[in-house]
Length: 248
Image (cartoon, rainbow, N blue to C red; front, side, top):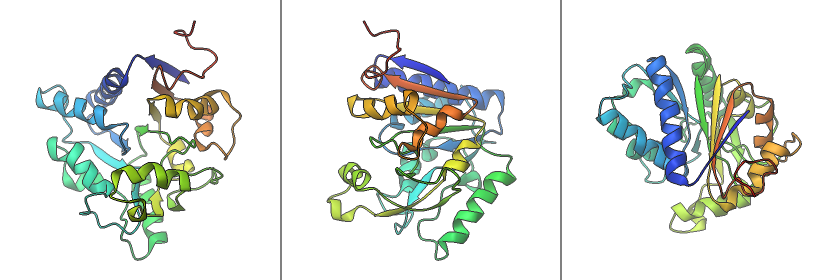
């Protein structure tokens, strides 16, 4: 486990983008695991800028997103498919056929989940997976008390998650209550993991994740067992950690 504490969101975004770009430069046909939400937006902007100046080429990259709301068409403004197009895919040279996002409108959701994990396995697994973290410790949409053995699956969203995500919708009633998400097992099979967190609202979750016991009550705590995980967090998110260099 590696913990990088930075001053602010901008520095977090730049460091994450450099790590992602370095992966692609070293292995042009990398398989990237991507996250959504407000946290990685800055990282995506940095990657777009790096692409535009010729520092990184995404033409051979394959991508797999962590999750998608269930019941939202991919063209819905609030779908994660739309989010990825607006924040990254429309601005780089990734091939459409190499983009993988769970189908939130799948009639047979169990088959969709099994097929998603199969596609990841067929390309040799995810080389580097980006994660955010919820205030309740969720990663992807794996809510507290999720089974650590779960592959991609349909999840019921926690009330806290629904409330947090309501800021992206016109009203809380519009927020989907279920989602298709990579499971903990799928995430943990990634060769490398980067977890990003910023702001004091994530401080408790970060402390429990890094210094607490490994428990399904804090899904991200399982990352303590991963062989190559890097936390890039700002000072506010790191504020409750016991052992960080900037604390006086």
